[in-house]
Amino acid sequence: MEFTLRPELAELRRQVRTFVDERIVPVEAQIIAEDRQKKYDTLRGLSEQARAAGLWTPHLPERLGGRGLGITGMCTLFREMGRSPVGARVFNCDAPDQGNMDLLLSAGSAQIQEQYLMPLARGETTSAFSMTEPAPGAGADPSNLRTRAVKDGDHWVIDGHKWYSTGGGDAAFLIVMARTAGEPGRGKSGPNDASMFVVDRHAPGVEHVRDVGVMAEPLLAHREAEMRFHSVRVPESAVLGNIGDGFRLAQKRLVPARLTHCMRWLGLADRTLELCKAYITTRESFGHVLARHQLIQKMIADAATDIHAGNLMTWHCAWMLENGQAKEARPYSSMAKTHVARTLCKVLDDAIQMHGSLGFSEDKPFASWYRHARSARIADGPDEVHEVLIARDYLTAGLNLLVG
Ligand SMILES: Cc1cc2nc3c(=O)[nH]c(=O)nc-3n(C[C@H](O)[C@H](O)[C@H](O)COP(=O)(O)OP(=O)(O)OC[C@H]3O[C@@H](n4cnc5c(N)ncnc54)[C@H](O)[C@@H]3O)c2cc1C
Image (cartoon, rainbow, N blue to C red):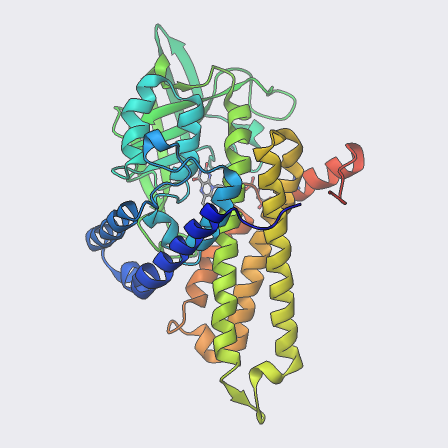
């Protein structure tokens, strides 16, 4: 076990932290408040600076302008970017673009990479991932998938209804999961019945129905899009991997994507705790600063312990992926995801509590961050579905808890 960062990674981490603290945090509230065009302009300016500093898309290979960092390297940097809710976007490492880039890189045809991956990697476009459907379609249970793709000559024709395609309205393209065999429902749908297609957002038949109103106002431009696909024709080169690979590719995308969420969430939880420290060590109540009260210390101790545990879980799982143990990593990624999502929600809720009325106000960012954080327990699989998986692996597959 080695917890010391190699020197070049430690240096990169320092650079990202300095960039986030000195250039992003001072303007993050301004960016969030700006109108759409101004937001883009400010973000573009910061992205140019990140690119000039050599910190752009570090997860991508060097030929695409990145640094070729493996997932443990990403862990280190994404935590720093996540300290600001707008940080990852500045470095072109935000969801869903970052996971989509990885997917196109590993499963996209040469044409798809040229047409869609390159502009995405350069930060000229954004993208969306369209798996979830309104009931009775695919949600926590992907076997309910109802969107269909049918072969017609040398094209595929897609019909279906999706929602929560984050950023779908503005995206240049969507990765659409569609059924190419079988029927919706448990027992009727097999592991090879779904496929993924890259669909141009402006292809004939792609309808952006609306942006769904949600608990949290968007911090950037990413809204939850409801989309309809009316006989949308795509060429065979738009298929990711092979026909029938959809569910496998979804897992391949989701396990690391879950971890990158964890990394960003850990960064935000850590910064939240730092902000709490600043308040409770100066605000006096009943003759002492708040930090002297044991009930406050309990909240700090719980948060510190949960953040540390989440960090180790995420780190361990990333290490497994890097060592070719993607299948074995699945239950550990579920543990990390549920634990870190809950930790972020709890730390933010306690931050509001420790700050009292100030915490509840918009003068502090916790209320807004909390509204966003709440989705972490639902998106990329709700807590309960991950817990079912963890329990199953423990009860039937001998999941090892005392690793190392
Ligand atoms: C902010 C946000 C962004 C999102 N972005 C995207 C995106 O970009 N692309 C995309 O495709 N999807 C996206 N999603 C959708 C997300 O992946 C789904 O919400 C999630 O998979 C759950 O599906 P569902 O909402 O249909 O819940 P349902 O399937 O209706 O489940 C409802 C609830 O039932 C419970 N439940 C379900 N199964 C079980 C079980 N086996 N045991 C016990 N309880 C269970 C859970 O509590 C669950 O929350 C996003 C969601 C949110 C909130």
